[in-house]
Length: 228
Image 1: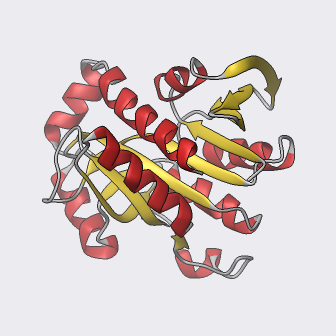
Image 2: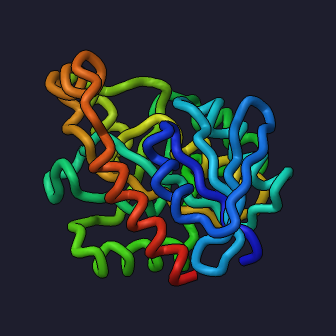
């Protein structure tokens, strides 16, 4: 791998990794700030894409086209759907799928997929990093949509249709663009909430500090990069 592209949706999800870069510099493209440098002797480009699928897709394409990223890591927080883990634990995405899209119609275009499989080597590196950090984790499907899920009815509907380990707002779009460009990817998510009524109160109304969750994700990303 010549260049690793790393993105998150919020500044907190990227600034911890950006602080680890050697010989750092920044560039602006498409309304996004890109942080360039070296991470564990590997060329890396980091960015805060912004929230939602369009922002994530646009930033991913720039990482690939403008900066030559030949591996993509999507990093950040998510809402938990699994009984095996809880808040503060991690999901390593084996695949990503949209929960709010007409999958058959999207699959009519290259790469012709309804679900996007992650690269086994990247998943393995992330799992090894979790073990080294002593972080409880599972691997599984990640579901993506342009909605913050904090409603038991919506949660049950997504669970029935997608059976994800967690849900968030960017991963499948990152995976989709990576797959269109034949670039390997992995999604690493730390659980910030349980997608219930308390989630909206905690993260939206109270604007809860997510730094601790982002630090977990950043440490795992760094550990994964070191293994590549």
